[in-house]
Image (cartoon, rainbow, N blue to C red; front, top):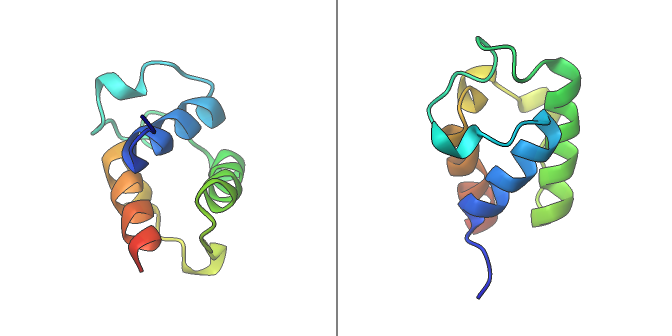
Length: 82
């Protein structure tokens, strides 16, 4: 059985953030808690783009849309379905 989009996003996010506890609180504020910074955000964009074959343009990035694991998952799910 393959992983859901959300599970795959969380796996990639945990790898990029070098954390293994992000599934425990998918509403954690990634920037406020200093889990993601600008470099890790770019790394995450590239990893998600490659994993899901979607285009994530840094110019259209809005931090508020990517502030929690739940929001990142929703963003990717919408992009995959588009």
